[in-house]
Length: 193
Image (cartoon, rainbow, N blue to C red; front, side, top):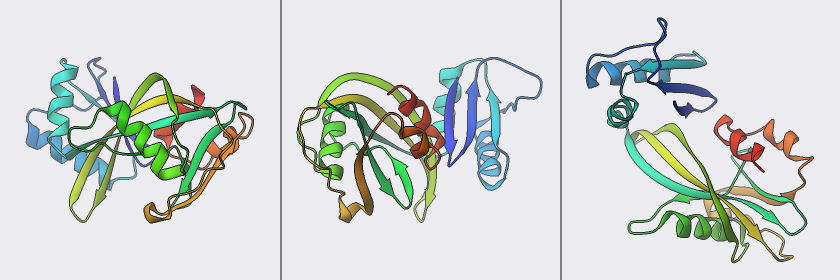
């Protein structure tokens, strides 16, 4: 199953059939189904195809597709680095530049958005998908997440040019309060912390 978030609502792409799951016959039908969901208030939608890879390939054609990378950074005091943008807590991430490797993009974005220099990648985590709309159309963003370690005592500095309002280290106990004001797509990442 592949989950794609539309803010805090989700489309589940699946190759397991249940009678109430949506089916489609062609890409036009799929695009219409997706756009209807985007405009609706439904919390979730299941779309079925016996070939999950084929379904995802067709689903991507409904959007402008971009890739991003980011980090769940833990310091030597076992605190987690978070940022706040547009009033919502998040993890640092950003668009992968042409020719850039995902892990290098993740490190660069953490450094740019928080001022924390030289975090070290510990391991790759899951990827998340989310959709958003702007004046240029509908977008599907895949974000490659990495767990990182930072050994140092620097205080994070929010990148104001990217409208980052706050950047800070939070304890594991405080992460649950942070998760109350975040995107659903990030909850599974924070739970892995």
